[in-house]
Image (cartoon, rainbow, N blue to C red; front, top):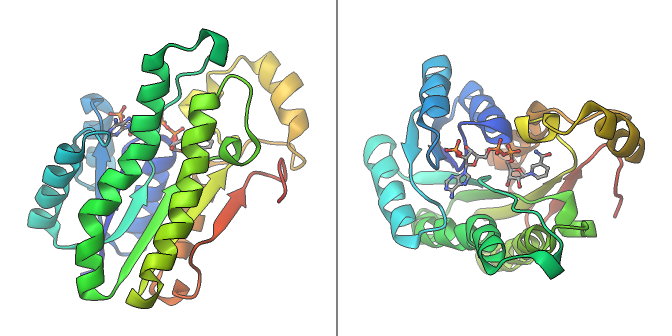
Length: 241
Ligand code: NDP
């Protein structure tokens, strides 16, 4: 049996592509989700990957959810922190609820998940953690102070956790996607995509969820043990650092 991989937000969008890629590579995959039961059921019916419902912004729920996954599949050796939301607005109009929802779901969730798997990974001297951050955590984005702060926070967290666990066979990395053609981005009016978004992308198109998934599969492999604390940008050349 392959190693157990847990993908948060693994039933839709980029996360679903990651779940499928890892299942295809022979891992035992568990996909978590927040509340869209219909999408989760359709995903499991299509892929055979089991879906588990809990809120990643809730520490106790993460602890219980991980225990349930481990009870069914075995210890989590690979964690992909992918779940995320946006609640955009200019700061001068932003409600505290918009700020807290985005920080809790995107950043505090990464603490909640990692804290509940890291001791087991250290005991077993193996682990792979990949967090899906964003181009907007690297460059900032008008209307997204909350999201940019959360996504930049994930990058600092990744480097610190990588240092803490480098001698324990655990790698910790981040991926920063640019515009990826998920439901969220495809919902943007075609005219806005064509006139405002695509001209910013040198490659001249949106990315595909599978292009992020391939990058995750590369980072979680057993033979990727020398890559840790890295931030990999997958953005069609939109922002180069
Ligand atoms: P989607 O909105 O398509 O999917 C989000 C997934 O996360 C769903 O499975 C959702 O569950 C889950 N989720 C949301 N909130 C919670 C929560 N509180 N607890 C548990 N699960 C939750 O997102 P994308 O695929 O577009 O994005 C995936 C990641 O990639 C995010 O971190 C996003 O910030 C990042 N990203 C996306 C880009 C893009 O262009 N799409 C660009 C850069 C970064 P449910 O189905 O139940 O709602």
